[in-house]
Image (cartoon, rainbow, N blue to C red; front, side):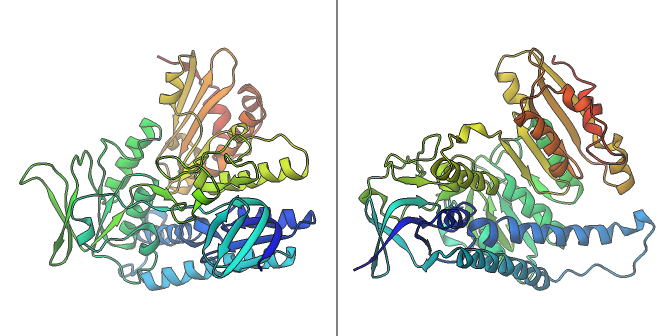
Length: 458
């Protein structure tokens, strides 16, 4: 005989553990099943370790640039990737332990193992069958491995396995120019590796603002990252010193030889081995679980949260998924996924932060727009910190005066952007910010100035 719970949560990403604790506090019996490490992608292979490593890379960069600030050091900068990894690993371990303590203090039952559905109310973990009145799927996603010629014959890295390296690659080839690709490209270049970034499209981070995309390419090249865009055909072969990446369709086209290759070409949901068909849960052609605005699957007592539901794909959207479900189940709420305003950041240095629509997306609506841009070199705080690379942009609906979207690519942009996000969430006109008095010297103080220079879009 197995055990019965009011709720079973499969996976411990940013939605699962918090939902488990909240349901348990409401008096429910709750089991959380995790096949590997508590904390999901963010804690183990995403935000936590990579942003810790970005911080180490920033230090290495600033040491090399120290003379610009009147600080003079002797000798070359030596980066120990083993020590960088050790620091990141310690932060990850502390985060895992925090999740475990939260679940234990809440009285949740944590079961380690691989969960598979047996029926719509039952899952199997090892030799045990667990029954739940309600089931929540929070299994996340992993790096996609594209079907490219020769890839199966070479040793390649993903965002997860790259974090296990203890020695710097001599020449890292990054295949994929999205957020993961550009972050790792800059990071390892700053650590001291030779880096080439290959992208099949004509520009990097192609979902982002066009101007920001061009600036990211400029920044990476300034720091010594070689770019190969428009790589129409990609194939791989072994090389005596590592790997060869072929970036053209014709014989004799460019070959890039490197010691290591990182494949950063998107994500796939971890739904393929859950036996969802036994529960009747539908998935789409890419393996994602379609959900309604309140995150129900097609089976009313089964929900899907986080990356596997294609409703956001970020830590903050996964956490908001938890908030939506908890409010609706326990507080009689009517919260919906469509209530949130899209917001994201790419953690190169300086960071690129985006809320709402990009300029290109706003233009596609056909509305009359007001647009303002301002270079970071006009921001006093950026000048004083010696970090003047980047751009601010805001897009406003000329009729309603509501902000449709904004981008800050520059020092502190990932923090300053929230003053705009909050105004958008409150559904207030942009003049709410222009009439505010911000602290000097900050990056945020230029937001009223930016909005005060809005002009009709041409």
